[in-house]
Image (cartoon, rainbow, N blue to C red; front, side, top):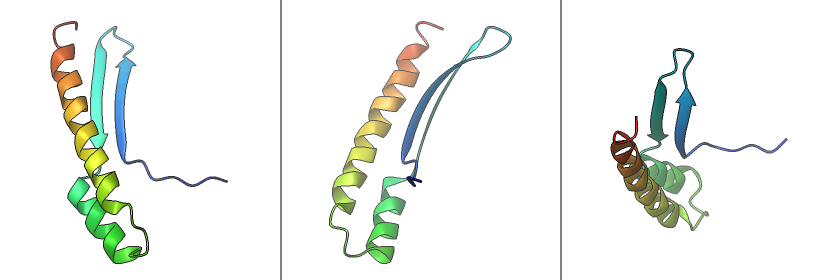
Length: 71
């Protein structure tokens, strides 16, 4: 079985009452990088992944904000 840690999630849900729910959730990039550096110091991609999480968070925040024009 493949194990994975969810780092970023953007969801669009249609609720039973017909309303739309948009959620954006992610780990804090600083927490991710610190945890990886402490728990798996041999992994060399911590900073790059943290940077990607920062980017995705900014894109997700923008998408949630702009979606208010539609729903």
